Every structure is written in C-alpha cells, then in structure tokens.
Amino acid sequence: MKALLLGLADAVQQAVGQLGGDPGEVVGRGADGGPSTRIDRIAEAAVLRVLEYEGAAIDVLSEEAGLVERGGDRLLVLDPIDGTHNALRGIPAFSVSLAIGRERLSDVEEGLVRDLVSGATYYAAKGQGAHLNGRPIHARPFDPEDSLFSVYLGTHAAPAAAEVASRARRVRNLGAASLDLGLVAKGAADLYYMHSAVHETKLRAVDIAAGVLLVREAGGRVTGLGGEDLDMPLRPDARTDLLAFGDDRVLEAIR
Amino acid sequence: MKALLLGLADAVQQAVGQLGGDPGEVVGRGADGGPSTRIDRIAEAAVLRVLEYEGAAIDVLSEEAGLVERGGDRLLVLDPIDGTHNALRGIPAFSVSLAIGRERLSDVEEGLVRDLVSGATYYAAKGQGAHLNGRPIHARPFDPEDSLFSVYLGTHAAPAAAEVASRARRVRNLGAASLDLGLVAKGAADLYYMHSAVHETKLRAVDIAAGVLLVREAGGRVTGLGGEDLDMPLRPDARTDLLAFGDDRVLEAIR
Image (cartoon, rainbow over all chains, first blue to last red; front, side, top):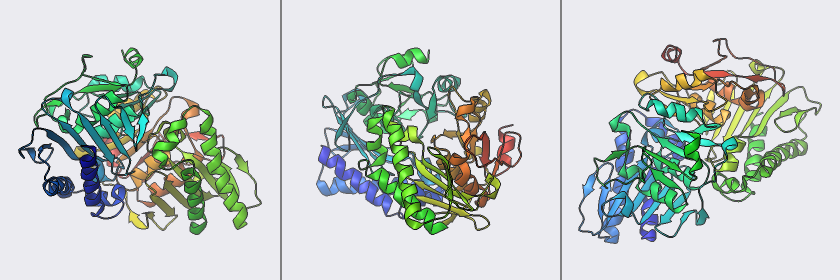
C-alpha cells in the first residue's frame, strides 16, 4: 500500500502548506491553542478525504478522531501532525506518521513518515528494509566517543532521562517521536530515549507505529524500559515509554 | 550590506546543495570525519569567491580560515556551516551564520542566518528589528506552564545545564547555536542555555555574532552566566557560555 501512503502524505503536506507558505515558520504564528486543533484536524480531514476518494477499505486509528470503522480488514494508524506543539511554536520539526497494521504494534506491515519541514520521506515494509527518499538506511554502529542521543527531558521526564542525557557526547531532541525514531533509523542518533513520569505524555501507538517499524527494518531495536521488544495494542488509550537504538552496546553506555 | 549577506548565503546554500540534493539527508551520508572539513571548506570557499567577485573591501573572520585581512574597515564574521556535526550525521539542523562588525560582539551591525534545511532566512540590523523571511519576529513573553528551553547537554555540559533542563515543560536542542538563537528570536523557545564545562566546546564569535543580534533586535536579551549583557572580542580564540531569552521572568524559573 505504499502508493496509498504516499498519496496520503502528499495530501497532508499540501493541506499544511495551504495554511500559509513555509510550515516551519508560518504555522507557528498562530500559537494560541485554537489553531492546534485546526492544523491537526485539517491534516486528518485531508487523509480521510483521500481514503474516501480512493474507496480504500481500511479502518483508521487517528490522534484526533480515534477509531474510525470503515469496513476494512486492516488499520491505518495515523498521526496527522506529529509534533503539533513544534509546528505551532515554530520549532522546525513536525511530520505526518502513517502505518498499516491490524491489532498490535508487532503486526504493523508498512510505515511511512513524511518530514513536513524538509519534505523527506521515510518508508519501511516488513522484511524489506527501511528507506529515506528511496535509498536504504541503516541504524548506526555505536562509537562511545561520538555518541548522540535524543532524550525526552523536562518537567514530565523521569529522573533517569537526565542521567541518560548526561552520558552522551551530544544530546538533541526534536520533540516529534516519528522524527526522533527516524534519526535512529538513519543512523543520525545512537539512541532515542523516552521515559516519561506522566502517563499522558507517554507515547501512543499513533506516534510510533511507523517509526518503530522504520528502526527495526533499519537493523535497530525498539524495547520497553525493561529491555523487552516493544509491543502494544493499536488502540487510542495505550501509552508506552521506549528505547530505540541501533547497537546493543548503547545499553552498556547508559547502564 | 543586506544584499551582500543575502548573496553570500545564497552562495553557501548553492554550494551545499551541489553536494547532493536534500542537505538534511544526503550530506549526512559521508559522516567519516573527512567530509567535515570538506563541507565547511566548500561553504567558506563559496563566500570568499563571492567577496572577490563583488570586490567587497571587508575583512573576514571565519571558522576555518581564521582572520583574513582583505583591506576592509569592517569584519565579516562567518560560520560557513554552523552545525557541521548535524549535517554530517543527518540531523536536519545546520545553517550559515554571517555578521558585519568591527571589534566586538557589541558593535555588530547586521546579522543574517540562513537555515540550510528549510531555506528560511533570519536577518537583523541594529536598531531596525529582527526579521524571518522578511516578516518581523519577536521574542516570547514567558508562560511558565508552557515553557520550552533549548539546553546544551551531554558529557561536556556543566551540571547546572541538566538542572535548567529539568525546569522546562519541554526541552529541545538543535545543536547549532545560530539556529537555537533564532528559536529564541522568533519566540519558539523561551531560553537558549549554553553552559559548557569544557573550554573547546564553548561558543565562538563566529557561532553567535549574527544570532545574538537577532535575539536583541527581537526584544530579547543575551547575557553571560553572571547576568551581564554578553560581549566578547570578534577573534578566533574567544569562547563564551551564554543565556538568551525573551523575558526576564525566565531567570526566576531557572534560579
């Protein structure tokens, strides 16, 4: 269903673009709470419109609309805007995240993430590797002297997160899970560490369904905090912490 | 000298683009140490070529070449690629930073930062405000419930940096000082906090000459760790820590 996913990403990119030029800048102008709903809803509506037009028999799990039954045997797991807060404030890191699955994270078959600032497209299909703009990407072998971690920090982060950040030579954080997972998949980051102390800010299936497949198909691993391979139901209420990394030696560096 | 600065930024953008398409992705492919020099040198050479062609009588202080005397009464303070490490690894945050000054940070007259991923252009002239893509930008009034700090973290950061990060509702870090300062100037971030425990990773004049003017012209402040308005000589060997913020109430939040 790659063609469908690409068409949906294009539709979101176009809808966001019509909000006024360069999204990294212009969308950020109206950051007063109201437009948050607006940009997410506009993006979601664009996806649903294309699904109708294409007559695609697929159910939808989306951040805004929840579960939309459309008589399908498969489920489109959608975050129409991942990084809404970034988009509204003008931080240039937000995306649309699309995945095709059924019941659980582990049965996701395809994932596509479109970076809505640069326009770059990540795509993975189970067993077929991960790609960025059509070229294969791979997670990174770990070099402790040159480590770069993406770590979720701030008042809602667990204290362990600050400790993990202190172990990396460099720390970055984009604040959009699908893009942070993309950094691990393409070998830009060694680790994406998300450990929230607050249930509401943990990650949802819509945030990570595509990104987790990207990392795994790029040769990396995604686990829970206990080290088990991450799985979760594709449901609106499920939340999780996670670690995503390219090389198990990262685990020694943060022990 | 806005036209000249724009021409120089265009030249760098074009030179980087010729390295192979989408810079946020393709430049990152060759991250083996060698290309680091290459991308910086290519960008710097592009600037020097335009200066020659235009017959611009201006000296240059650049990250790569150091001080280049060209018989001018003013100094172009240049970081041809701010965020080289990002560019090489594929983190989509790097820029060219250009400023016109004489002796010290406080006498910088103009600054221009081009985001080489999104193509956005920040520009400020002393006493004339700060602009992003031609539109005025302003630093942000502080809302403690919705704080977003950009904090330099990792093994080289001072312990105080982790404490500052723990006070923000959200933490981001782009790892390119000119862009992190741009986030404060446009009101995307409340604070950029750079406090390195290692002399070599503190900020240089070439990193911040343009960005500091951007923040100040956007109504924000840039200080040293002691709270004094930041100043430093425009010299290759000078290094500094800094705080940049839009609203003094940020200082209470991190006290």
